[in-house]
Length: 403
Image (cartoon, rainbow, N blue to C red):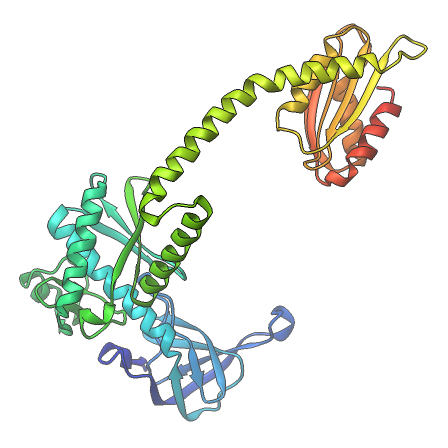
């Protein structure tokens, strides 16, 4: 006996009664950290199973929580957290989740119709995510003007509050009516019609009027293999996103001490200043490294073998400063340098070419005792410790080792 899908005819109904046909354990408690699960089959249901890019509904069957809904083509299986006795049962859906999914799915139909009709971009897939939804478009890259035009056109239909209806018919009948995307299925199909805009076979839950979408916001467009993935939010999600954007703009404007309308120029100025500072830093770092190297060399005495071993734990230095300092130190004869950064755990071992040590071998020995990764040559090796707090101990070990 096939499960009757009550949501096909009325997506706004939120509670129902049904006959429990079977209730079977799906997995044992010892196999699941959260306990056993039961699969319940009903003669009819309002709960939508994951299908066609739309996630499943959640809800309750009597006292049992519906954790998942699986589409077995003929029968729908409700995954619940406790057994439900065979017989009559009352069920309900989690309405906020259902309404959110209806807003996103109806918004997808509307956007797909606009992109195809006005810009020749066909939707090849749809995904309704927890935060944002996406449609993958096939065709030339949608320019910013096309994306803006599609959003404006879609929201114009939202504001017109057009009727959305469920229609039934064969694939041939829908083809004659101008369906957006033909499907190769036999028998009676269900389709969603947005008056004057779109007709598309679909088994999902949808709104009754476009005005219930509230608003559609496009959030981005990226290349995905041969297609273009457009991110969007509708309704309550669009409202939350817009308020979040406004709050972020206000925070950034306050930090930059400018009005929202001047935020773009303020960011451009900061980027210019950052680039100029980076250029100056690139020039200054080698000079500072040379000066510090000279000071360290002057303050370090040679051992009995004439080797000056310099171990230095630095704090919060630029990413390439260790390398610059190591290069400056190892340029002097009979010098071995063991350097590390206390904040990042970066380490650099370097030596003058005439010193008979192997820096790569020494680094490997250190990393066998202190977790991390790295490598290099006999004269120069660098790496990073998984735990930066071990940097001092790693330097002490390196100075005590003989490669």
